[in-house]
Each structure stands twice: as C-alpha cells, then as structure tokens.
Image 1 (tube, helix red, strand yellow):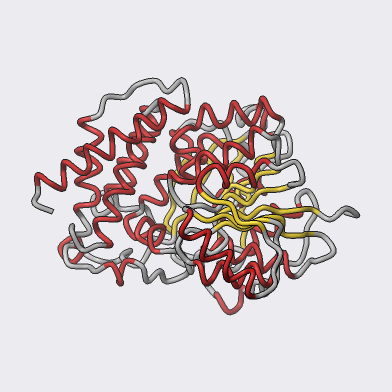
Image 2 (cartoon, rainbow, N blue to C red):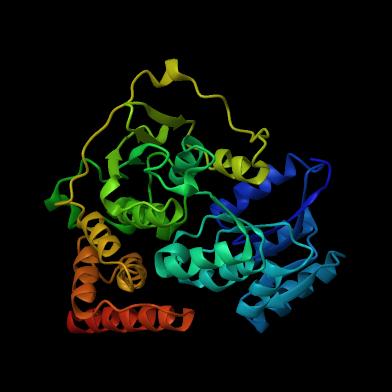
Length: 396
C-alpha cells in the first residue's frame, strides 16, 4: 500500500472512534485523518483535532461550532468546523476521502453513512442501525455505487473473515449451513428474572468484557444488541433469519462462527478488543498490526457456550420476529428501543419494561413496505410517537 488513505471518522469521540484513531496513529505512513465528528463531548473532540489535525471537524449546531472554533483558533489549529447533518454528509462523501468509519450511534448515523455509500466510498460500518432501519435501500445503494462495505462489529467482522471471498453469489452456493452469532450474555447473563426488576443503569452499563458507550451497553445487557446484530447479519450476508443462530459465549473470545455443509465450522478468535476488527477493515484485503496483544489460550483455559434465554431476555425474540417480518418492522423495533433505552438510563422505566414498551409499539404499528428513505424516517417517527405515548400512559 503506497498511497496514504484519508479517513473520515463519524463519531470520533465514542469508543469505536477512539479505537479507530488509535489504530490510525500506529500507521501514519498508511492513514491520515481527513475529518472528525462529535456530538456533545466538545473538549474531547478539540483534543482529538489538536492531536490528529484533520481538515474538518463537525458538531451538531452553531453554538457547538462556535465553541470548537474558539478552541481551535486559540491553539493555532487550522481546521474548518462544519455543523449539523449537512456537515456530516459533506465529510462522508468528500472527493478527498478514501474511507469512512461510520460509528455514530443510532438512527442519527443513517444519512451520513448512506451518503458515504452513495459516493462509492470504502465504508467501515459500525453503525448497525443504518442496516436495521433501511436494509434493502442501503444494500441496493451499495450495489449501485460500487462502495466497499466492511463490517466492524466484532461478530460480523468475524463472519466476514470466515466466509469465502465469493460469498456474495449466495451462502448456499458456497456451502454455508448456519451462521453462529456469539453473544457474551452481558452483565445480567446469570441474573434471575425477579432480580432484573431492580437493576440500575450503572449495573447495565458495566459490561464484563467490552468497553462501550452507555446505549450499546444497555442493548448488550438486554440482548437487543444481539437482536440488532442478527438483523444486520441477514442484510450483510444475504442470510435468512432462520440460518442465523445466537450462541451465548461468556468469554467473548470466539467472535462468531460459520457452519458449512461438509461439517466444517470456521471460527474467528481474538481478545475482546475492537481494534482487531477495525484494523482488519482498515487494511483489507491486507493485514496490519492493531496494537492488540496476542491471544493466550492457556490463560483463557476454557470456552463455554449456552443457549440464550429468551424468557429473561425477550428483546432477542422481538428482534428475530422483526427480522422475519421485514419491511418496516426492524425500523420500528430500533426506534422503540432507542426511546426505551433512553428512558431506562433516565430512571423513568425499569429494565424489563424496555422489552414491554418495544413489544407494544410493534403490536401497534403495522408493517409496511419502505420504498424510500423518507418512508424509513416516517416509520421511525411513528414508532417514537407510540413509544412516548406508552411512557405517558404509564405515568413516566
């Protein structure tokens, strides 16, 4: 690789963004930061700009932009500040950009990620909601533009590594029988249903293996994260929900597996560190040092597997049902979950009520076809309104 690749990092102040910048910093001869974006952590974004010297930084509004500009000017950093969704889309599809790390959490990441796809970029996809909300439209845009789409979630990156290079001609055609999607089980893997009623946001965010943001940590605790990943896997690999099986693997060493018709099962193993899949995608089809320590199987000593308990963790059941229903159901599921998780983090609902709210929203909102991005956001908005109504009905 002789040419330096210019990278836009959408969601630079989050855990994925920071890990991406860590890998980039280890290879200054290969990668250069073109743009960084952030939402509320302006001081952290300023520090990142001063360290990586991007051409652009993007923040949500004019007030944030003014504050960031003042800090950049005071430090003598020549970085242009943009704002809002338009700014995100601009740095995602700029002609100078070679690759985009799409790591904005939630529905807010959909438009800029899609802008990068439509511009034919190499897109490192960490924003699973983009596919969950608009899978058919998103994958059609990938095909139309010729964009290179590389999965960053450790599970999907593992599946990608375990599939043959020509898997796009059909999983059955290349002999795939099942995709085995591993899950840590989260902090409440062994917690009783009764005890789940009283768990706190702090407990839900204390993941035993991974360092993640609060929203995705709660999703992991409820196993909704695995449900969203199931939907994402179906779109990424053109897989029917029926062949994607979730396996609880507490050690988070095997990141996922692919089962072939000849009896072979290929697995990708590694320490639970997001720099591994990030480095894999950044350098693909080559490989580079990620900075992650080698896996010590003797220290791990054992690998355990369990069947997920969908009675205690109904979010996984709801996500599978949404995947099977298709059309607008996954977008509705995602929107209701975002409202529910935020309410839980604010102390307005109990942990098991996350699933209760989502299930009622899915029952209220009919499944419809989504022929445009506008239709996707309309379904998203209706689901959020149903979720807010649920909160009002329950006095929250």
